[in-house]
Image 1 (cartoon, chains in turn green, purple):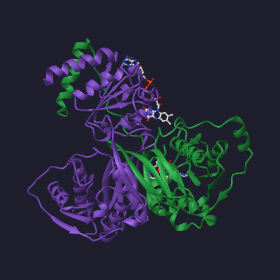
Image 2: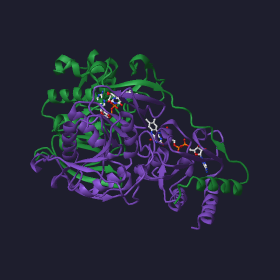
Image 3: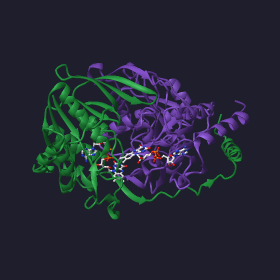
Image 4: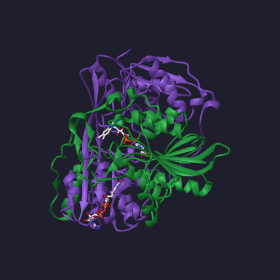
Length: 265
Length: 328
Ligand SMILES: Cc1cc2nc3c(=O)[nH]c(=O)nc-3n(C[C@H](O)[C@H](O)[C@H](O)COP(=O)(O)OP(=O)(O)OC[C@H]3O[C@@H](n4cnc5c(N)ncnc54)[C@H](O)[C@@H]3O)c2cc1C
Ligand SMILES: Cc1cc2nc3c(=O)[nH]c(=O)nc-3n(C[C@H](O)[C@H](O)[C@H](O)COP(=O)(O)OP(=O)(O)OC[C@H]3O[C@@H](n4cnc5c(N)ncnc54)[C@H](O)[C@@H]3O)c2cc1C
């Protein structure tokens, strides 16, 4: 079985975020970066799939030079191979352009049975790239996956549980499939020292726009129809009121205020 | 009409709730801005009953694709049918609720049409003939405004409860436009085998009231009190990641950057410190109540009403008062 996994590099939640204000994009250089937290679950699911069914894992990441770090981390965790998708023309891509580049890479890798992705990134946080990727490839679109029950590469079938409103939907789907996973699907392992040392020495292979046969008019800030035109810090919530006094009075005040909102039925 | 605003009417096996029509309200406001009309669009086995309700909530027309293959939701079938409608009629805007179904269909339709989209939108306005969409990024630490310059339609998913419900008027009617579009069963990728109803039936995203417990609740038993308050108010139980990671409550209850994003009318946080990743999931709630024994806890900066104290003393008192006042 051939397993692909999509890993995005994102700014560390604690890092100071630097914006390129005129273009509405992130200045990704000089920020502390990590693998998108949801993508750790995607990679772990790929590792578990290989353990359970055999196969090889190809990890891909679209991003500038630095994004090689997330692929190095994937190698340290024993991914069989990695591919960075990097080209100056990719900068500022919207979700469609991103999914398009990822789709081109998946096609170029060839014979992929299942693609694992995260539910959502913690920076752009749109949560739609996996669904767009599935639609572009015409493959099974399996989002919000909380459990992979079985994969049958020979029979071209996968059964998953999708955590949606009110419960879990059990879906049987054809392979190939794009599976986006939620937190809690597994417990991501950590790389060991030897893996990290080995990965540190590897030259990360790159595919540029030409390698991928990407139509330059469809990618990057220029080719994307979605544009970020304004960035603002949300207004602070109105200064709150600390209710003071004896606990009896506080409870009285609060319940009156909440009942006045006419929300409680 | 070319400038119309379309609202995707979500249903589950043909069943709708009033929330299915939520976006017809903001849809009407946008249509007024464009000088056009708000219309609904439905993919399902049968659309007539759903259309009738959509008219009552303000849709002037309802576009529909009907077929046995659309009985239950399947991302590929629904997206292909929705795309056929959007491609044929080319409305200016298509709005979807940011639920699992709405997001699946919106994303796949946008991709099939060749455009990006704006997700989990909190603000929508017409600006120079284009729609300006405002959403949160970076765990709510920033808001960004997005335009979708060349896209037809401009697609957005909208956070549930971000806009007021439209008024219902049963006397209103409209035109149902049915388009034929079918997908052969053999060409469909997925089949739903069963639905496992969650034991606690948590639907945080639709809840008007959420009572959340954090690490400060102390242990699994602590959630009994949280649940008692939630149940009495007809609300849902939320949790911080610390509480989930401690194994006191399942992940489906988690609110925050790596959990659910919610916007209830009342959010009561008990023993939650207010980390940015938690705030990311609930800071747009209408009214936030924080109960925390540490007066310096960051949650108080986001709270509408704050109570400094031990939740074990405060919550039972609140329950007692509500019982008296609400007669429960
Ligand atoms: C503040 C901000 C706001 C934005 N708003 C919008 C918007 O409203 N609409 C829009 O179309 N674009 C928007 N973008 C651009 C969007 O973030 C990028 O297109 C991004 O490359 C992919 O979207 P995402 O991070 O939201 O991914 P998500 O859809 O949240 O990611 C889901 C999964 O897809 C995979 N994935 C995503 N990106 C990559 C990658 N580069 N390499 C490998 N795997 C990947 C990962 O597995 C990830 O877990 C915005 C960007 C920023 C910084
Ligand atoms: C990438 C990433 C993603 C994350 N995603 C999420 C997410 O989705 N959701 C989330 O919640 N967190 C998330 N976190 C974790 C987040 O940073 C915090 O660690 C977490 O929210 C803390 O939970 P807490 O407030 O319950 O616990 P704590 O921060 O430990 O706070 C407990 C609070 O309870 C108070 N307290 C103690 N006893 C009592 C009592 N008897 N009565 C009243 N108050 C009491 C204390 O004063 C304290 O303020 C994420 C972190 C990272 C790095």
